[in-house]
Image 1: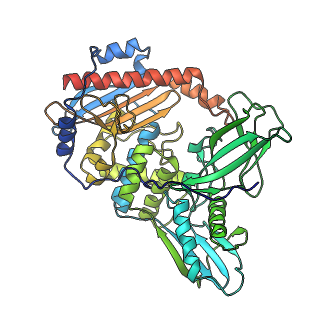
Image 2 (image 1 turned 30 degrees about the vertical axis):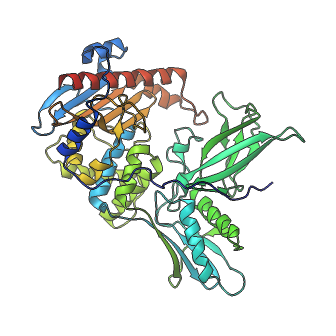
Amino acid sequence: MGEKLKLLPPRSRLLRQPKSGRRVVVRLAAALLMTLAMPQWARPNPSPAQAIGKLGFADDEVGFILVDLQSGRSLAEKAADQLFVPASVAKLATAYAAERILGGEHRFSTLLLRRGADLYLQGGGDPVLTANDLQMLVAELRGAAPVGEFGKLVYDDSLLAAVPELNGRQPAAAVYNAGLSALNVDFNRIEVTWSRRHEDGGLEFHARSVADGLTVPSEWITFAPATDRAPPGASFLAAPGGAADRWLYAPGLPDQGVSYLPVKDPSLNTALVFRELAKSAGFDLPLPERGRVPADAAVIGRIDSPPLAAILAGLMRYSNNISAELIGLAAAQKLTGRMPPLAQSSQLLTQWLETQLPGTDWRGFRLENHSGFGSGSRMSPRQMAALLGLVARDGTLFDALPALDGYGVAATTGTRLAKRPILGKSGTMDYATGLAGYLPGRDGRPLAFAIFILDRERRAALDASMDPRILEPSPEARAWIARARALTRDLLMAWAAEY
């Protein structure tokens, strides 16, 4: 039975807006003054070598650097020129390049056009487009509806080549591995609820796209039982083919539940969400079809995203992979005047970054993509520290960095912060973690740090044996990540005590 469109209590679209640019020393000193009264950790701080050994890491699995930004002097370092997998720490590189190339006021546009009785939805690669925005476009139909019935509903995603998932070697059902195109809505993820029917004992599924204060039923996304035995840890499997996203579910699902799944055909899904919103507003639109906007079509509606500075604040806090890729692609397009493929786009930004710091040894540095999603990216702690020096002088991006707790996780309201809270960006994968950012010294001077931890042997083995059907990491991988976070915390505590 169909689910009606629901209105929810409104929430802010971007939970954290960046403040105006300020000097690094002032912001770090202010953070220090505000938290001097916070409780300190009571136990003594182990030395880096003690912490590494105590937590069971091999010596070559850990690399770090701590730099005084005022003098440029390295205060502490270990394997600082060794290459590691940065995971989502790579988003700092993407964010800096995009902010400098595009500018903090850059906006992404989504257009609604009309020619005769035909409607055209044209994507501009907006990384934060929501159903709320599409609802505003629907409102434009009031004064632009044709006499009689609508003709075609065409979606134009020709700005960039669509992909069904960011990384085919990663879990297919992970929300962070959604498809990507020029038309994306609600971060290309859907909420799925299910319950068991009384009449026949089967499972009934409902999918919906969730935005701030608005949910849109997405019943074109279908579910069927898997015919083959699903491996442990695989609740949903992507089904090939079909006109829209189709999922197979494992027979072991509980009688009821809720989950989130990635959208694999984001352009079609966005057009269908638009059509559903139009239907709720009283417009009967045909099923959407892919095509190009004709030259003589007239613009009847336009949605511009928030400025890039605000988008970056959300990216630094929530680390959305789709947002990072779209931002990086837009920067590469601005550099070249054309939209390159994703792999080539990350190479272009890598080359641009190297020109910003010609005195840095960039050998081995590689961005596999713009998000750090995957194990193909490489960077050293010293390369990251050089980039942090640039970020520190960029008020827009620096102000976008969230405060982190002692484990390097973005702090939320009520989180007990460290004695001197850090600002920065973390990254986590199975057997690879990173954290890069800024720690205020006791005297208020800004200190930049980068910490990378990587079990190369286990990570390589995991990449070789990865089953994209399995979503959850193994207990061994979860335990390794917990130890890596504990080591990161111990290193930060030791530096805070010494400097």
